[in-house]
Image (cartoon, rainbow, N blue to C red):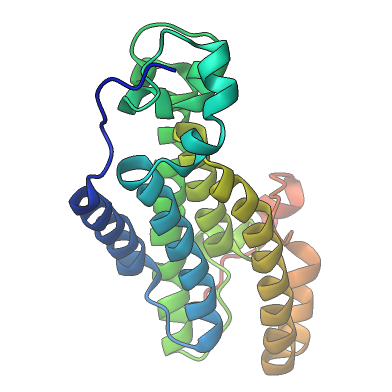
Length: 221
């Protein structure tokens, strides 16, 4: 295994990137109750685990070093570009930052952060009026904030997959589904028939842009 040159051990970058991406999400999500903090904390744990391997200690590279060293004997596995495992494992050449998956990851990242921003704006004003959020992204799905978090995490997996984040991702998705269901029970208690009518017309996670969806009135409270 060629280990000449080590691009890891950059713990300052781990801290800076973690603070930036966690802080950026916080500025959109602004957790208030325990359920909010649980969902935000799960996202934060994923981000820290990601950047700890991306710049600090490449645990996945170490664990897979035997197989990677045999399959790619001329690759510096401790060079930063080797951490783009989708690119490396498929035998691609050149700069991985211009690869299809890396570029696609930005679609999910930008889309996820945009969805978080739009969802929080609607939810904030609905909560101030003690009403039901139904406008903006809530017009199409009941839990756009959780979809936003999942999109962001999936985008990072396309960029930089690690064994830990690959294991964490389905666990966190399941956690968000359970949080969404618990949130719906609370909403039904608070809003009764209004919630049931909204829930009957609006999918939980996967939108359908049909005639019924376009015809539903926009109401954020």
